[in-house]
Image 1 (cartoon, rainbow, N blue to C red):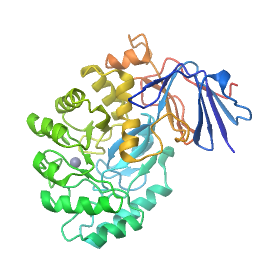
Image 2: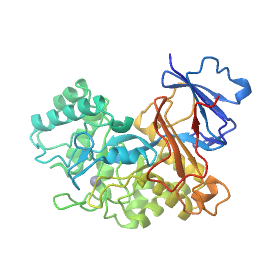
Image 3: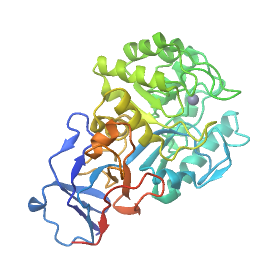
Amino acid sequence: MSRLLIRNIGLLLSGDLKNPILDADTVLAGDGKITAVGKRKDIDAEGATLVIDAKGTTLAPGLIDSHVHPVAGDWTPRQNQIGWIDSYLHGGVTTMISAGEVHTPGRPKDVVGLKAMAIFAQRAFSAFRPGGVRIHAGAPVIEHGMVEEDFKDLAAAGVTMLGEVGLGSVKDGATARQMVAWARKYGIQSTIHTGGPSIPGSSLIDKDIVLAADADVIGHINGGHTALPDEQIVALCEQSPRALEIVHNGNEKAALLTLRTAKALKHLDRVILGTDSPAGSGVQPLGILRMISMLSSLADVPAEVAVCFATGNTARIRNLDCGLIEPGRAATFVMIDKAQHSPGKTVLESIQRGDLPGIGMVIIDGVVSAQRSRNTPPATAVPEIGAS
Ligand SMILES: [Zn+2]
């Protein structure tokens, strides 16, 4: 049995909105799962096989990107780049959710073809984790002609979510609602594209279609990239109980409007973050960190709360085993510190001022996947391996 001890944690962010900062300095994990969180003197770390001295830095759950468009392996044809997922690992992202493998060249749009592609993507990304990043993929885009049996077949084959509703031929509320309901019946979660077309060939999905479809996640409520008018965004926050997904490749003003509206409604638990990348604006290895900083600094949300949008909130809404620091959850962490020369006094203050934190280590399922990030500004202090 592997046993991981992380000691000397300066600040422990839980990912849980209700209690975002834990009074603890030590985390213990066994076989990739958290077994104890507390004070060093209270934790029996006998037999630890890997000891990490956090050096007083901050430990948070690994970041979850709720909206990516992977295709195959660590390659994206959108900008013809390789190694993009490994680069996100260096931005603290440990888990990604596919919103559809829509950039696949020659993507099949007939029913048997789209089902086959979803099952292929689910299998391939289950078996291949670039840099250790866990990718939940295999997200079919619904098309006219699908029947209830298709959703039953997909679920039986291991498909757990739909790609963005609206990217295929189904763009009317009534058909979308029927298919989303069939998907939900068989345990398949759904996300809907919101706003104007992303790229030529994509189309407008307005608030009436989003409300009619009633998908589990209001995908990129701040547009991907073109946002709906303000009053429609506010109406979605007020009239739908579903998750409010804010993305990096969206409209930033609309992102702030969404967050302020959710805050006023006391619905911050519905806010989740994604990049919606790769996209026309490329790949963004630091996209989730940038969203946390942007939302915290410009919408006056404490940094420890903004971290929850990319961790615990997403884990709860997406039914993931990571995203929260509590026994039984995946031992998947990002360890950060104030970036060198940031004027903030603490890492949280530096984020609230709009700076990015520096990443010192990323751990996925109890395994060290990256040490000092090659992509973030350098962290002031970094954790060390093997000092017990
Ligand atoms: Zn979209």
